[in-house]
Length: 73
Image 1: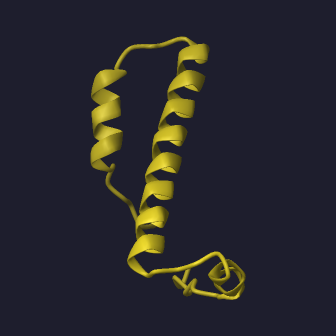
Image 2 (image 1 turned 120 degrees about the vertical axis):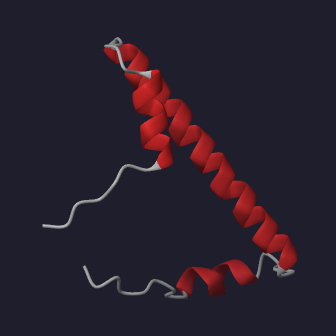
Image 3 (image 1 turned 135 degrees about the vertical axis):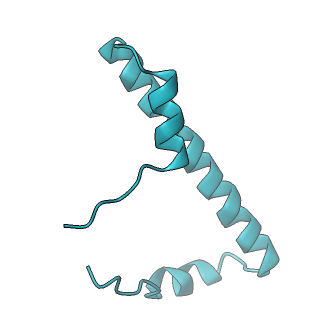
């Protein structure tokens, strides 16, 4: 069985939240993290769009591409 170490974010969160917190706070923090990473992904996509000079007509072409690769899992 393969063991994986915790990420730097997981370790930091363990330090910050080493005490029990309310479920509503957990939900709020989960939403904040999701929002942060969603906004970051959108910014990165916007940058790629500009860097590649894509136009709205490229949307259909890009949506049909298959760029995922097998991870061997």
